[in-house]
Image 1 (cartoon, helix red, strand yellow):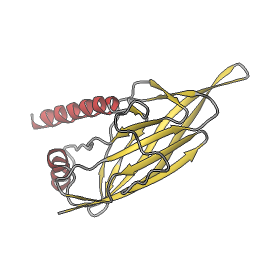
Image 2: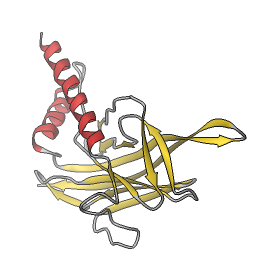
Image 3: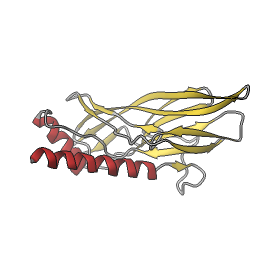
Image 4: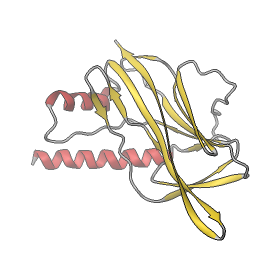
Length: 197
């Protein structure tokens, strides 16, 4: 019976996380608090990777948070190609935020629904998504890990050192010589932050 309750709770968490994840995809031009441009200074931790016509940025507002303080991590995708806009095809979101807590060596999975959706990005605009708490556990996991994940869900990030191995995963349809060809992208980078008492 306990296993069914646990599985129900994990399933509900996955559904809620994927729904909120999709709802938080913002286009830079319509975001009431605009995303920082390349010239604006970011006080926290940030990293950037470029592949083809796309730039992916991963940002944490701070390098160090206090326990119980909201951790603000977000990803941005920018199209820098020659067209006015491009349509990308992705799961519930193109953004993924798997995290490792390095002190305990605990992984915090970032679970994503897998429908096929598309988003059009205009050149020079930023597509942005904020990290929402993820993670999950099963019956075979150790009690310390289960307690860690429950604490993350209820109180925010426990004290520790965290590495975000963020990435975007999507494809574009390229029309070459009258044929539609898929061009896949998986652009990765990482940042880290600390949570202290």
